[in-house]
Structures are given as structure tokens and as C-alpha cells.
Length: 132
Figure 1 (cartoon, helix red, strand yellow):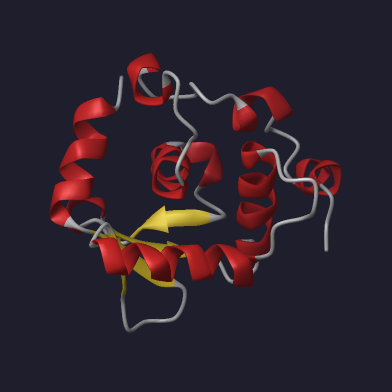
Figure 2 (tube, one colour):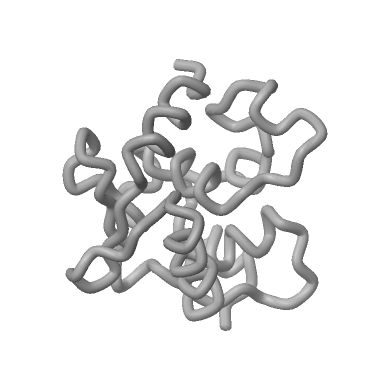
């Protein structure tokens, strides 16, 4: 299990503030008085070209995205830090949360390894809240 500092050392162009700022690349109204949700965090990462080595669209128009097998644990560690967890987040724990989104219809598991898809409604909502 890697610490956030270890993760950042592997990705020097990223800064702690850049990744953990709850308003990064997203409208201030999105998180006003709310806890950030995993699918918002993932959308931010997907829209950030600096994070393409960790998670990327395949393609963006369909809402399908894939985690890099090499860097999936880095995404999980960053998500845990963003949430303010005291214990390190693992990809296994984060993927359980992603599977739970299928129950609410927000994100679905795709039959390819490490691949998920935002529902159409979720993707449209995220795109409308995105400020760029």
C-alpha cells in the first residue's frame, strides 16, 4: 500500500493541492455543502489530461472509461485522501463502491477488465456541471 506522497513522487507534475482540491475543474456549486462522490472525482480525473496515465476515456462520448492496470492503486489512494480517510484506500475497496453505483444506475461495470461506464443521465449531469 502506497502513501499519497509515494504516489505523488511517481507523478511529479501533479501537486497535492491540484488533486485534493474539492473544486478542481468542477463548478463550485457541485460540492457546496456536500461530500464529494466517487463518480464526481472520477469524472474530474477523466477530464484532466495529467491523469490519463491512471484513468482514461474509451471513448468519452460513450461514457466508458478504463483504469490503467499499472496505476489503478494510485487512483484509489488519491480517492481515499480526497475523502479524508485515515486508512489507505485500495482499488479493491474503491471498485466495490463502483459496483454499488450499479444499484442506483449511475455507473455500470463493462465486461472488459478495469472498465466501467457512466449511465447516460449521470454523464449528462456531470458534463453540465463541468466548468471549462
